[in-house]
Image (cartoon, rainbow, N blue to C red):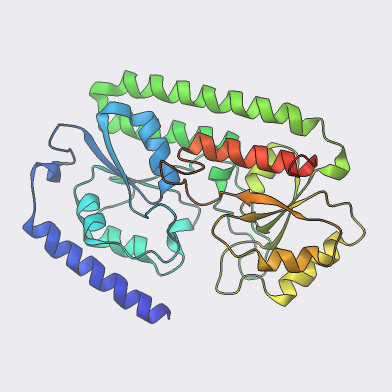
Length: 316
């Protein structure tokens, strides 16, 4: 399967190169035809923060389509062309773009983008949480964007790059980043007051994937999961058994599943403990504009509200 995916990616990239070489325009200098800075991001959440900080002076696009799998994405010719014409490529880092089919590195090589010149990790400076699962133990948990406090660091890092690449609008980017960070801080304080008031027994955050570790740390919750990070084997009997054993005899107010994932593994878990599934969390992508979480702020607020309502029994 991996070999097939690799072939598909290679075809897509080659097609994109041909497309790009035969359709060059003024955007090849890193700016759009109207003078805005061309910025692409590895996935939709980073793109959304880039739009918030960049505002009217940035022409921002996500490479990975909304709702698509970040690990085994197949870049389209349009993705290749936009990347080729970009002055800035924002990546999450923490090994996120290194996994799966390796499409990101292939795309960067094809479009001649380099770390420190056009590619920048938006997680620089974050106090990372280490994975514990055998085989990946000690590596950074890449899902820092799911923490509200960590989201502020994303915005600050993005602003620094935009200010350097487009110094004429440095004050504009700095002002927008400061306002956005203040907005996220206010959101954090709202939910921190609520989560802090919960009894210790109600502070268990049980999810299918361990993508909410940073959120849990932000709000003093204890994270539990079936699998810690996406692999080819998610929700195995062994993983389910390990979680059930960890929760046996514990009060578990609620459990949660990730949007777009089958809830079958979690249903197996709750069949063996006294709990229920309280709702869906958006952990890897914003939604379309007409959807539940069209912005990163909406995603953070939705997840906090869903978790809080579940832990307090207000989801029913």
